Length: 162
Image 1 (cartoon, helix red, strand yellow):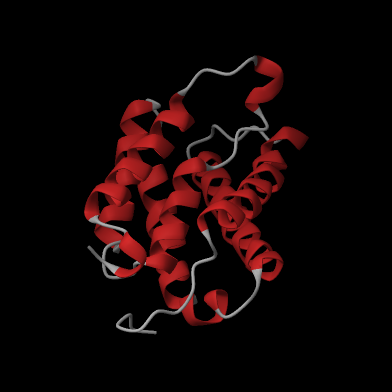
Image 2 (cartoon, rainbow, N blue to C red):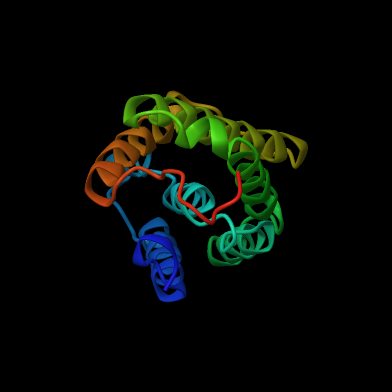
């Protein structure tokens, strides 16, 4: 087992669960409020167990999302790699703060992910921008606050490099 009792099964199951929650059908009214489950899981594990959550894992999760959602191949993969890279790079700054401050930083990462998705859609000529496009930032931030209050905030642990 690794720090805080998180083995590889916990990481794999949570990433699979995040992908399942992303693909689960929702009513049309709630679709815009769907949190960025995979991005949240990638951020959480990047902060909690950086040696297990690397860029390759983030890329694979993004690629799985691309295939599952029949979108542009590489769009989610690019987004997840950028989000994971920034979470890993800014890990020391993020984990040193309390839950609300972490939530603001996570909201920034989710906002960046949405901007990257919009940018790729615009290049492909598929950009559709409505108010609902930005709603996942708020819902993801709320999920982060709830999740970290239940699971615990990612923190510095002996043996993890910062």
